[in-house]
Image (cartoon, rainbow, N blue to C red):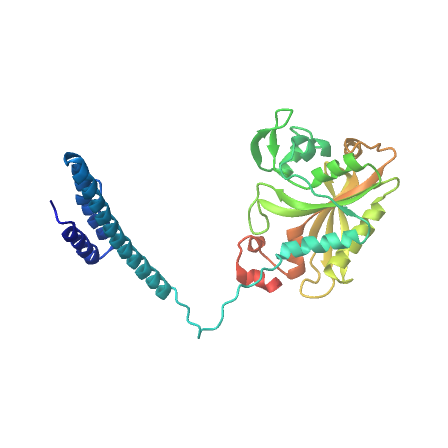
Length: 338
């Protein structure tokens, strides 16, 4: 019979000579693997007499336990060496200056968004929010912009691969006007609300982005006139830019959802932008068809609506010439506002 003490000593030597974990596992297989020497000795027990089989089996089990203990000892040595190497590689030089995590800041467009909300809340306007994936009816038809109307090309947008109840593809909203309709149909008159949010159109250059931010306002009551529109929006611009040194003009235009309709322009009367007219908003008295789609009677309720790009307001407030800077995530640009 094989001397088990020599087998144990041989296993210890092979485990100690293993230079890496893979070599150690190869050595283990030679002794206690499926075809290892200990395994073969266990299988040979069946040929021994019962009394001798019992005694020999106990000897083999003790030898196996010693070999496994030697194996685990070597495994632990490899693990400790690996940990020591990792700790050495990740050692921190405590003589270096401390590191800190910089705090985030508010994006300039969001600063404008917050400022617009604050100004309009101060004069009694609510703030409404709603879905960015809208139905065709809320995005166009309810706003006096029926299917195949040429004015729809003014708000060419993106569509998702889903359909509404009428079988029309669902658009990403090209403006926040759908929230005016939703708000009016759930709240009724009188209505004083603004709807800021993300909007989408197929446009991309230095002054346009396929995704941009807009704020729309709506005031509906028994006797809300164009004069109210001029007063509210002119005062808003003076509050937003914190100056009285500007002139506002209302230039006739066309929008399907308002009648009469205007483009709102402004001009600073001092500073580096003095004397230059800048388009700032579209506005007008809400069209009677749109008032009906609000669920209201246009013979009793009248009012105005406006829509302004938050990026445009931000660019004018901070003197930014390229809209794309807002979306590039360049920290050198963004840190100027925080």
